[in-house]
Length: 473
Image: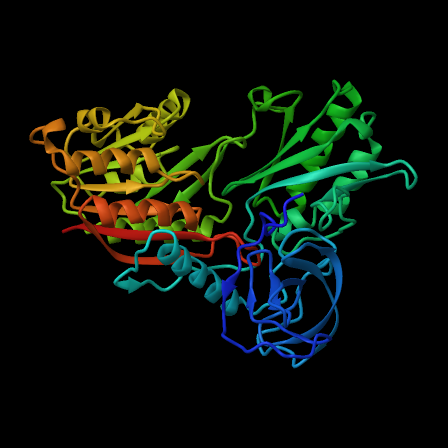
Protein backbone atom coordinates (compact mmCIF):
# COMPACT_ATOMS: atom_id res chain seq x y z
CA UNK A 1 0.00 0.00 0.00
CA UNK A 2 1.21 3.53 -0.76
CA UNK A 3 2.53 5.78 2.00
CA UNK A 4 0.70 8.78 0.52
CA UNK A 5 -2.07 10.40 2.54
CA UNK A 6 -5.42 8.58 2.57
CA UNK A 7 -7.82 9.76 -0.15
CA UNK A 8 -10.32 11.03 2.41
CA UNK A 9 -7.87 13.50 3.92
CA UNK A 10 -7.98 17.11 2.73
CA UNK A 11 -6.28 19.08 5.49
CA UNK A 12 -7.09 22.76 5.90
CA UNK A 13 -4.67 25.05 7.68
CA UNK A 14 -6.38 26.77 10.60
CA UNK A 15 -3.48 28.14 12.66
CA UNK A 16 0.31 28.25 12.57
CA UNK A 17 0.59 26.85 16.08
CA UNK A 18 4.16 25.72 16.86
CA UNK A 19 4.65 22.03 17.43
CA UNK A 20 5.15 20.93 21.03
CA UNK A 21 8.47 19.16 21.53
CA UNK A 22 6.80 16.61 23.84
CA UNK A 23 5.93 13.54 21.78
CA UNK A 24 3.29 12.37 24.29
CA UNK A 25 1.13 15.46 23.71
CA UNK A 26 0.34 16.68 20.19
CA UNK A 27 -1.05 20.11 19.38
CA UNK A 28 -3.96 19.99 16.92
CA UNK A 29 -3.30 22.62 14.27
CA UNK A 30 -6.08 22.13 11.76
CA UNK A 31 -9.12 20.11 10.75
CA UNK A 32 -9.65 17.99 7.65
CA UNK A 33 -12.98 17.35 5.95
CA UNK A 34 -13.37 14.03 7.72
CA UNK A 35 -13.43 16.09 10.95
CA UNK A 36 -10.06 14.70 11.97
CA UNK A 37 -7.68 16.92 13.86
CA UNK A 38 -4.33 17.35 12.11
CA UNK A 39 -1.09 17.51 14.12
CA UNK A 40 2.63 17.03 13.50
CA UNK A 41 5.13 15.11 15.54
CA UNK A 42 8.51 16.66 16.26
CA UNK A 43 10.00 14.80 13.28
CA UNK A 44 7.38 16.35 10.97
CA UNK A 45 5.19 13.26 10.59
CA UNK A 46 1.50 14.14 10.14
CA UNK A 47 -0.97 12.63 12.62
CA UNK A 48 -4.73 12.54 11.94
CA UNK A 49 -6.77 12.31 15.15
CA UNK A 50 -10.46 11.45 15.22
CA UNK A 51 -12.74 14.00 16.95
CA UNK A 52 -9.88 16.31 18.00
CA UNK A 53 -10.26 20.05 17.34
CA UNK A 54 -7.77 22.82 16.52
CA UNK A 55 -6.04 24.26 19.57
CA UNK A 56 -6.44 21.15 21.70
CA UNK A 57 -3.55 19.04 22.94
CA UNK A 58 -4.09 15.30 22.78
CA UNK A 59 -2.49 11.95 23.37
CA UNK A 60 -3.12 9.49 20.56
CA UNK A 61 -3.61 5.77 20.23
CA UNK A 62 -2.37 5.08 16.70
CA UNK A 63 -4.50 2.68 14.65
CA UNK A 64 -2.73 3.08 11.30
CA UNK A 65 0.90 3.99 10.71
CA UNK A 66 2.72 4.77 7.45
CA UNK A 67 6.14 6.27 6.68
CA UNK A 68 4.91 9.88 6.61
CA UNK A 69 1.56 9.84 8.40
CA UNK A 70 -0.38 8.18 11.20
CA UNK A 71 -4.04 7.92 12.04
CA UNK A 72 -5.57 7.30 15.45
CA UNK A 73 -7.94 8.24 18.24
CA UNK A 74 -7.28 10.51 21.17
CA UNK A 75 -6.94 8.90 24.59
CA UNK A 76 -6.47 12.13 26.57
CA UNK A 77 -7.16 15.79 25.86
CA UNK A 78 -6.28 19.08 27.54
CA UNK A 79 -7.01 22.67 26.64
CA UNK A 80 -10.47 21.96 25.24
CA UNK A 81 -11.38 24.10 22.23
CA UNK A 82 -13.90 26.90 22.80
CA UNK A 83 -15.59 25.67 19.62
CA UNK A 84 -16.25 22.20 21.02
CA UNK A 85 -19.93 21.48 21.69
CA UNK A 86 -21.87 18.49 22.97
CA UNK A 87 -23.16 16.54 19.91
CA UNK A 88 -26.93 16.65 19.71
CA UNK A 89 -27.22 13.13 18.32
CA UNK A 90 -27.15 10.18 20.73
CA UNK A 91 -25.32 8.10 18.13
CA UNK A 92 -22.47 10.49 17.37
CA UNK A 93 -19.26 8.46 17.14
CA UNK A 94 -21.16 5.27 16.33
CA UNK A 95 -23.04 6.41 13.23
CA UNK A 96 -20.82 7.13 10.23
CA UNK A 97 -22.54 10.39 9.30
CA UNK A 98 -22.38 13.92 10.74
CA UNK A 99 -18.73 13.75 11.81
CA UNK A 100 -18.58 17.47 12.67
CA UNK A 101 -21.33 17.53 15.29
CA UNK A 102 -18.80 18.19 18.06
CA UNK A 103 -17.75 21.45 16.35
CA UNK A 104 -19.86 24.60 16.75
CA UNK A 105 -21.99 25.25 13.66
CA UNK A 106 -20.36 28.62 12.92
CA UNK A 107 -16.92 27.03 13.11
CA UNK A 108 -18.01 24.31 10.67
CA UNK A 109 -18.94 27.00 8.17
CA UNK A 110 -15.62 28.78 8.70
CA UNK A 111 -13.80 25.52 7.92
CA UNK A 112 -15.77 25.11 4.70
CA UNK A 113 -15.10 28.69 3.65
CA UNK A 114 -11.40 28.07 4.27
CA UNK A 115 -11.53 24.88 2.18
CA UNK A 116 -13.04 26.86 -0.69
CA UNK A 117 -10.45 29.65 -0.46
CA UNK A 118 -7.62 27.16 -0.13
CA UNK A 119 -8.72 25.20 -3.22
CA UNK A 120 -9.26 28.32 -5.31
CA UNK A 121 -5.76 29.53 -4.56
CA UNK A 122 -3.72 26.34 -4.50
CA UNK A 123 -5.45 24.65 -7.46
CA UNK A 124 -6.77 27.52 -9.59
CA UNK A 125 -4.36 30.29 -8.49
CA UNK A 126 -7.35 32.64 -8.18
CA UNK A 127 -8.86 34.76 -5.42
CA UNK A 128 -12.35 36.28 -5.46
CA UNK A 129 -12.63 40.06 -5.14
CA UNK A 130 -15.34 39.46 -2.52
CA UNK A 131 -15.79 36.48 -0.24
CA UNK A 132 -19.54 36.02 0.05
CA UNK A 133 -21.10 35.13 3.40
CA UNK A 134 -21.88 31.42 3.47
CA UNK A 135 -25.40 30.34 2.65
CA UNK A 136 -26.71 28.56 5.71
CA UNK A 137 -30.03 27.44 7.09
CA UNK A 138 -31.53 24.67 9.23
CA UNK A 139 -28.81 22.54 10.82
CA UNK A 140 -31.20 19.80 12.00
CA UNK A 141 -34.04 17.95 10.32
CA UNK A 142 -32.80 19.14 6.94
CA UNK A 143 -32.07 15.91 5.08
CA UNK A 144 -34.98 15.41 2.67
CA UNK A 145 -33.06 12.82 0.62
CA UNK A 146 -31.26 9.88 2.19
CA UNK A 147 -30.37 6.23 1.69
CA UNK A 148 -31.09 4.12 4.77
CA UNK A 149 -29.43 0.75 5.12
CA UNK A 150 -31.55 -2.21 6.22
CA UNK A 151 -30.12 -5.33 7.84
CA UNK A 152 -31.84 -8.35 9.39
CA UNK A 153 -29.92 -9.51 12.47
CA UNK A 154 -30.83 -13.16 12.86
CA UNK A 155 -29.35 -13.51 16.36
CA UNK A 156 -31.55 -10.69 17.63
CA UNK A 157 -34.47 -11.58 15.36
CA UNK A 158 -34.88 -7.95 14.40
CA UNK A 159 -34.23 -5.59 11.50
CA UNK A 160 -32.02 -2.51 11.88
CA UNK A 161 -32.79 0.61 9.82
CA UNK A 162 -30.40 3.56 9.63
CA UNK A 163 -26.99 4.70 8.45
CA UNK A 164 -23.86 2.59 8.55
CA UNK A 165 -21.57 2.66 11.56
CA UNK A 166 -18.39 4.70 11.31
CA UNK A 167 -15.77 2.83 9.23
CA UNK A 168 -18.01 -0.22 9.04
CA UNK A 169 -20.62 -1.91 6.89
CA UNK A 170 -22.72 -2.70 9.94
CA UNK A 171 -25.95 -0.74 10.34
CA UNK A 172 -25.93 1.54 13.37
CA UNK A 173 -28.45 0.53 16.03
CA UNK A 174 -30.27 3.88 16.00
CA UNK A 175 -33.80 4.73 17.05
CA UNK A 176 -33.80 8.39 16.00
CA UNK A 177 -31.87 10.66 13.65
CA UNK A 178 -31.44 14.39 14.21
CA UNK A 179 -30.74 15.31 10.57
CA UNK A 180 -33.81 13.56 9.14
CA UNK A 181 -37.10 15.48 9.25
CA UNK A 182 -38.77 14.77 12.62
CA UNK A 183 -41.66 12.84 11.08
CA UNK A 184 -39.15 10.55 9.32
CA UNK A 185 -37.02 10.12 12.46
CA UNK A 186 -40.16 8.97 14.29
CA UNK A 187 -40.60 6.26 11.65
CA UNK A 188 -37.31 4.47 12.35
CA UNK A 189 -38.60 2.24 15.15
CA UNK A 190 -41.95 1.51 13.46
CA UNK A 191 -40.03 0.64 10.29
CA UNK A 192 -38.00 -1.88 12.28
CA UNK A 193 -41.16 -3.57 13.49
CA UNK A 194 -42.72 -3.52 10.03
CA UNK A 195 -39.71 -4.99 8.22
CA UNK A 196 -39.10 -7.58 10.93
CA UNK A 197 -42.67 -8.81 10.43
CA UNK A 198 -42.28 -9.23 6.66
CA UNK A 199 -41.78 -12.57 4.93
CA UNK A 200 -38.77 -11.22 2.99
CA UNK A 201 -37.14 -9.52 6.01
CA UNK A 202 -33.68 -10.85 5.10
CA UNK A 203 -33.91 -9.76 1.43
CA UNK A 204 -34.48 -6.02 1.98
CA UNK A 205 -31.12 -4.17 1.80
CA UNK A 206 -32.12 -0.50 1.74
CA UNK A 207 -34.77 2.20 1.77
CA UNK A 208 -34.35 5.34 -0.33
CA UNK A 209 -36.02 8.37 1.25
CA UNK A 210 -37.45 11.34 -0.67
CA UNK A 211 -39.50 14.02 1.10
CA UNK A 212 -41.65 16.49 -0.81
CA UNK A 213 -43.98 19.24 0.32
CA UNK A 214 -46.88 16.85 0.99
CA UNK A 215 -45.57 13.35 0.30
CA UNK A 216 -42.82 11.26 1.88
CA UNK A 217 -41.74 8.42 -0.39
CA UNK A 218 -39.97 5.32 0.91
CA UNK A 219 -38.41 3.31 -1.93
CA UNK A 220 -37.94 -0.27 -0.72
CA UNK A 221 -35.22 -2.28 -2.45
CA UNK A 222 -36.22 -5.96 -2.40
CA UNK A 223 -34.15 -8.85 -3.74
CA UNK A 224 -37.09 -11.23 -4.03
CA UNK A 225 -40.70 -10.75 -5.02
CA UNK A 226 -42.89 -9.47 -2.21
CA UNK A 227 -45.70 -11.67 -1.03
CA UNK A 228 -49.28 -10.45 -1.07
CA UNK A 229 -49.12 -10.27 2.71
CA UNK A 230 -45.98 -8.11 2.63
CA UNK A 231 -47.55 -5.71 0.15
CA UNK A 232 -50.56 -5.44 2.46
CA UNK A 233 -48.29 -4.74 5.45
CA UNK A 234 -46.64 -1.87 3.56
CA UNK A 235 -50.02 -0.33 2.66
CA UNK A 236 -51.32 -0.57 6.23
CA UNK A 237 -48.11 1.02 7.55
CA UNK A 238 -48.45 3.92 5.08
CA UNK A 239 -52.07 4.51 6.02
CA UNK A 240 -51.38 4.43 9.77
CA UNK A 241 -48.36 6.70 9.72
CA UNK A 242 -49.79 9.20 7.27
CA UNK A 243 -52.50 9.79 9.86
CA UNK A 244 -49.98 9.96 12.71
CA UNK A 245 -48.22 12.86 11.01
CA UNK A 246 -51.40 14.90 11.27
CA UNK A 247 -52.06 14.53 7.59
CA UNK A 248 -49.18 16.89 6.66
CA UNK A 249 -47.28 14.15 4.83
CA UNK A 250 -48.71 11.19 3.02
CA UNK A 251 -46.46 8.15 3.32
CA UNK A 252 -46.05 6.47 -0.05
CA UNK A 253 -44.21 3.18 -0.69
CA UNK A 254 -42.37 2.65 -3.94
CA UNK A 255 -40.70 -0.63 -4.85
CA UNK A 256 -37.35 -1.36 -6.49
CA UNK A 257 -37.00 -5.04 -7.48
CA UNK A 258 -33.82 -4.49 -9.56
CA UNK A 259 -32.04 -1.38 -10.94
CA UNK A 260 -33.22 2.24 -10.60
CA UNK A 261 -35.23 1.92 -13.81
CA UNK A 262 -37.52 -0.61 -12.09
CA UNK A 263 -38.71 1.78 -9.36
CA UNK A 264 -42.50 2.07 -9.29
CA UNK A 265 -45.21 3.10 -6.81
CA UNK A 266 -47.02 0.48 -4.78
CA UNK A 267 -50.16 2.63 -4.97
CA UNK A 268 -50.60 4.63 -8.19
CA UNK A 269 -53.38 6.76 -6.68
CA UNK A 270 -51.22 8.66 -4.19
CA UNK A 271 -50.09 12.25 -4.93
CA UNK A 272 -46.69 12.91 -6.51
CA UNK A 273 -43.55 14.44 -4.99
CA UNK A 274 -42.71 18.09 -5.47
CA UNK A 275 -40.77 20.94 -3.90
CA UNK A 276 -41.31 24.66 -4.25
CA UNK A 277 -39.32 27.82 -4.94
CA UNK A 278 -41.75 30.37 -3.42
CA UNK A 279 -39.69 33.44 -4.36
CA UNK A 280 -40.37 32.67 -8.02
CA UNK A 281 -43.76 30.95 -7.72
CA UNK A 282 -42.30 27.65 -8.99
CA UNK A 283 -43.46 24.12 -8.15
CA UNK A 284 -41.06 21.36 -9.16
CA UNK A 285 -42.45 17.81 -9.44
CA UNK A 286 -39.81 15.08 -9.14
CA UNK A 287 -39.48 11.31 -8.89
CA UNK A 288 -37.93 9.66 -5.82
CA UNK A 289 -35.00 8.48 -7.97
CA UNK A 290 -34.29 11.95 -9.41
CA UNK A 291 -31.36 14.02 -8.27
CA UNK A 292 -32.63 16.93 -6.18
CA UNK A 293 -30.94 18.87 -3.40
CA UNK A 294 -31.22 17.18 0.00
CA UNK A 295 -31.82 20.48 1.80
CA UNK A 296 -34.86 22.25 0.35
CA UNK A 297 -34.51 25.33 2.57
CA UNK A 298 -30.92 25.90 1.46
CA UNK A 299 -31.87 25.24 -2.17
CA UNK A 300 -34.40 28.06 -2.05
CA UNK A 301 -31.77 30.51 -0.80
CA UNK A 302 -29.17 29.19 -3.26
CA UNK A 303 -31.46 29.64 -6.27
CA UNK A 304 -32.43 33.13 -5.15
CA UNK A 305 -28.81 34.23 -4.72
CA UNK A 306 -27.73 32.72 -8.05
CA UNK A 307 -30.50 34.52 -9.93
CA UNK A 308 -29.70 37.85 -8.26
CA UNK A 309 -25.94 37.44 -8.84
CA UNK A 310 -26.50 37.21 -12.59
CA UNK A 311 -27.74 40.85 -12.61
CA UNK A 312 -30.41 39.92 -15.13
CA UNK A 313 -32.23 42.28 -17.49
CA UNK A 314 -35.68 41.46 -18.95
CA UNK A 315 -34.49 41.38 -22.58
CA UNK A 316 -31.60 38.96 -21.97
CA UNK A 317 -31.05 35.38 -23.08
CA UNK A 318 -29.53 32.94 -20.56
CA UNK A 319 -28.11 29.42 -20.90
CA UNK A 320 -28.47 27.04 -17.94
CA UNK A 321 -25.77 24.36 -18.35
CA UNK A 322 -26.43 21.01 -16.59
CA UNK A 323 -30.03 22.12 -16.09
CA UNK A 324 -31.36 18.90 -14.52
CA UNK A 325 -35.12 19.18 -13.94
CA UNK A 326 -35.04 22.96 -14.31
CA UNK A 327 -34.14 23.94 -10.74
CA UNK A 328 -32.47 27.13 -12.01
CA UNK A 329 -33.95 27.27 -15.52
CA UNK A 330 -37.51 27.96 -14.46
CA UNK A 331 -36.73 30.71 -11.90
CA UNK A 332 -34.45 32.32 -14.50
CA UNK A 333 -37.30 32.23 -17.02
CA UNK A 334 -39.43 34.39 -14.73
CA UNK A 335 -36.83 37.16 -15.05
CA UNK A 336 -35.67 37.21 -18.68
CA UNK A 337 -36.78 36.91 -22.28
CA UNK A 338 -35.46 33.39 -22.94
CA UNK A 339 -33.63 30.56 -21.17
CA UNK A 340 -32.02 27.57 -22.87
CA UNK A 341 -31.54 24.57 -20.57
CA UNK A 342 -28.93 22.00 -21.62
CA UNK A 343 -28.54 18.56 -20.03
CA UNK A 344 -26.90 15.28 -20.98
CA UNK A 345 -30.00 13.08 -20.81
CA UNK A 346 -32.93 13.08 -23.23
CA UNK A 347 -35.08 11.82 -20.36
CA UNK A 348 -34.17 14.77 -18.15
CA UNK A 349 -34.76 17.19 -21.02
CA UNK A 350 -38.26 15.78 -21.47
CA UNK A 351 -38.92 16.10 -17.75
CA UNK A 352 -37.68 19.70 -17.79
CA UNK A 353 -40.10 20.53 -20.58
CA UNK A 354 -42.93 19.03 -18.53
CA UNK A 355 -41.97 21.10 -15.51
CA UNK A 356 -41.82 24.25 -17.64
CA UNK A 357 -45.32 23.52 -18.94
CA UNK A 358 -46.65 22.90 -15.41
CA UNK A 359 -45.35 26.32 -14.39
CA UNK A 360 -46.60 28.12 -17.52
CA UNK A 361 -43.08 28.86 -18.80
CA UNK A 362 -42.94 26.84 -22.02
CA UNK A 363 -42.90 29.98 -24.17
CA UNK A 364 -39.79 31.33 -22.40
CA UNK A 365 -37.78 28.10 -22.18
CA UNK A 366 -36.28 25.53 -24.48
CA UNK A 367 -34.27 22.41 -23.65
CA UNK A 368 -31.76 20.32 -25.55
CA UNK A 369 -29.70 17.23 -24.76
CA UNK A 370 -25.92 17.37 -25.19
CA UNK A 371 -22.99 15.41 -23.78
CA UNK A 372 -21.45 18.27 -21.82
CA UNK A 373 -18.35 16.24 -21.00
CA UNK A 374 -17.42 16.09 -24.68
CA UNK A 375 -18.62 19.49 -25.91
CA UNK A 376 -16.45 21.16 -28.56
CA UNK A 377 -16.00 24.86 -29.41
CA UNK A 378 -18.15 24.29 -32.50
CA UNK A 379 -20.93 22.71 -30.41
CA UNK A 380 -20.78 25.59 -27.97
CA UNK A 381 -20.96 28.28 -30.63
CA UNK A 382 -23.93 26.53 -32.26
CA UNK A 383 -26.09 27.29 -29.20
CA UNK A 384 -25.73 30.99 -29.99
CA UNK A 385 -24.96 34.01 -27.89
CA UNK A 386 -26.28 34.24 -24.35
CA UNK A 387 -25.87 37.32 -22.17
CA UNK A 388 -25.39 35.23 -19.02
CA UNK A 389 -24.64 31.61 -18.05
CA UNK A 390 -25.66 29.52 -15.08
CA UNK A 391 -23.37 26.49 -14.69
CA UNK A 392 -24.33 23.76 -12.20
CA UNK A 393 -22.26 20.66 -12.96
CA UNK A 394 -21.89 17.40 -11.01
CA UNK A 395 -18.82 16.68 -8.91
CA UNK A 396 -16.59 16.27 -12.00
CA UNK A 397 -17.09 19.93 -12.84
CA UNK A 398 -17.47 21.57 -16.25
CA UNK A 399 -13.97 21.15 -17.68
CA UNK A 400 -14.97 20.42 -21.29
CA UNK A 401 -17.42 23.33 -21.37
CA UNK A 402 -14.94 25.80 -19.92
CA UNK A 403 -12.15 24.49 -22.16
CA UNK A 404 -14.39 25.06 -25.21
CA UNK A 405 -15.03 28.61 -24.01
CA UNK A 406 -11.28 29.14 -23.61
CA UNK A 407 -10.61 27.95 -27.17
CA UNK A 408 -13.26 30.27 -28.60
CA UNK A 409 -11.81 33.17 -26.63
CA UNK A 410 -8.28 32.47 -27.81
CA UNK A 411 -9.22 31.81 -31.44
CA UNK A 412 -12.30 33.86 -32.48
CA UNK A 413 -11.97 32.54 -36.06
CA UNK A 414 -13.45 29.24 -34.84
CA UNK A 415 -16.84 30.96 -34.61
CA UNK A 416 -16.82 34.43 -36.23
CA UNK A 417 -19.27 36.78 -34.57
CA UNK A 418 -19.84 34.62 -31.48
CA UNK A 419 -19.35 36.34 -28.14
CA UNK A 420 -18.83 34.84 -24.69
CA UNK A 421 -21.32 35.61 -21.90
CA UNK A 422 -20.86 38.81 -19.91
CA UNK A 423 -21.40 37.06 -16.58
CA UNK A 424 -21.28 33.48 -15.28
CA UNK A 425 -22.59 32.07 -12.02
CA UNK A 426 -21.02 28.69 -11.28
CA UNK A 427 -22.68 26.49 -8.62
CA UNK A 428 -20.41 23.69 -7.44
CA UNK A 429 -20.48 20.58 -5.25
CA UNK A 430 -16.69 20.16 -5.42
CA UNK A 431 -14.31 22.99 -4.47
CA UNK A 432 -11.43 21.30 -6.28
CA UNK A 433 -13.14 21.09 -9.68
CA UNK A 434 -14.57 24.59 -9.24
CA UNK A 435 -11.03 25.81 -8.58
CA UNK A 436 -9.70 24.05 -11.67
CA UNK A 437 -12.39 25.56 -13.89
CA UNK A 438 -12.06 28.98 -12.24
CA UNK A 439 -8.36 28.98 -13.06
CA UNK A 440 -9.16 28.45 -16.74
CA UNK A 441 -11.81 31.19 -16.78
CA UNK A 442 -9.57 33.75 -15.12
CA UNK A 443 -6.20 32.93 -16.64
CA UNK A 444 -7.22 31.86 -20.16
CA UNK A 445 -10.75 33.03 -20.97
CA UNK A 446 -10.72 36.73 -20.08
CA UNK A 447 -12.80 36.70 -16.88
CA UNK A 448 -12.29 37.92 -13.34
CA UNK A 449 -13.71 36.20 -10.27
CA UNK A 450 -16.05 38.76 -8.75
CA UNK A 451 -17.10 36.75 -5.71
CA UNK A 452 -17.31 33.28 -4.20
CA UNK A 453 -18.72 31.70 -1.06
CA UNK A 454 -19.55 28.37 0.55
CA UNK A 455 -23.01 26.84 0.72
CA UNK A 456 -23.69 24.76 3.84
CA UNK A 457 -25.97 22.28 2.12
CA UNK A 458 -24.90 19.41 4.42
CA UNK A 459 -24.45 20.70 8.01
CA UNK A 460 -22.25 18.57 10.32
CA UNK A 461 -20.57 16.85 7.36
CA UNK A 462 -17.44 17.60 5.34
CA UNK A 463 -19.32 18.24 2.08
CA UNK A 464 -18.47 21.68 0.69
CA UNK A 465 -20.88 23.22 -1.81
CA UNK A 466 -20.14 26.67 -3.18
CA UNK A 467 -20.97 29.39 -5.69
CA UNK A 468 -18.67 31.67 -7.68
CA UNK A 469 -19.40 34.64 -9.92
CA UNK A 470 -17.30 35.56 -12.98
CA UNK A 471 -17.43 38.69 -15.10
CA UNK A 472 -15.90 39.21 -18.52
CA UNK A 473 -13.18 41.84 -18.58
